[in-house]
Image 1 (cartoon, rainbow, N blue to C red):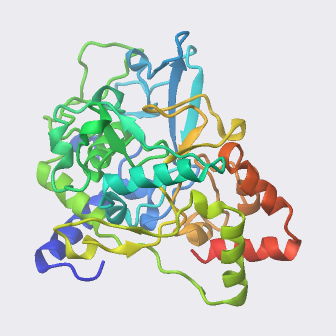
Image 2: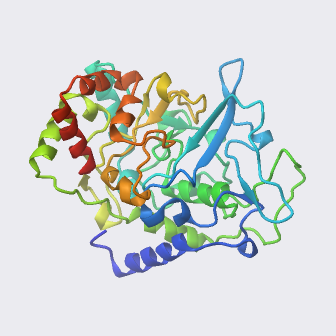
Image 3: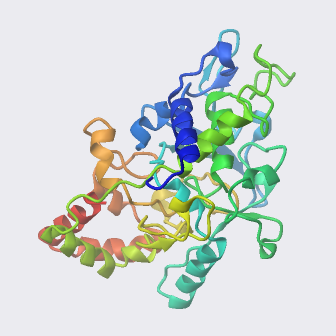
Length: 385
């Protein structure tokens, strides 16, 4: 981002270096893990490829509650292991299994700097509009964290606008991740180190274990924590200060026509074009208007996208509205073949729209009713983001 101080730029560059770093077993990877570097999932800070994805699982219980099956290694399957250890497998009792592609990671600092109140107000406005669109925040209790940290308060360090709200009944508003189960970028960073790479930090200081093989405290030979607090902080600052992608050809006639069709079809009800940040100690994030095309809320997408898996208070069919910025860059970042939706099941934008059921069903119907030319205009708009 423009406007960083010399110190912020220096820390950004340090975080960039650590983000690209390939960790080895001798540096603490494992004993079970998925990848060995951040940029393996997010090449060029863009969307990941289906070859590198994350499988999460759990079990819907008879009382209607969802279990992460932690005693069986849930919720995330670690598919690799260092020598002498066994990677995990999904247990037979899992009733819900979902595969997540790594998302675009630019502009995250702007999303984190949006006040909780703004997100609540978006939910209330949708409720008042009464047009079948009714998003809601995912409220996350500490016991719902993918990996329970040893200090919830530390997750809010340098993230003043993402703070506990008294009316959340002891829960925290999630805004990152496919199910909006991650509350801050620090939360995201330490969770990714632990669950994706098997690297410990001061907030998650114990190595992940294959619970289906043994629960005897097995760990690698590297002293914990394996990642220093300074490295975590630099990566968090790096993520905060990555600017969003610039629009391509926003004034082209087909793009402008497609933008109007996007709004007329009701797509902007969830993919909110414009948000504004609250106060921030980073000038580049302080009270800035930006255009992510998301409301950061959960929406019921119907049976088409129901994997039977969930996080927090989200239903298995509910997903956080994915920001659309950078959508048109999917093709070059994914090897000339784009993959859309949380698991990459759609290979064209038309196909992705066809999967939009539930609250998005009316918008899908309106898209289907468009002429071929108008459909192409709407797609041209999406590809410009």
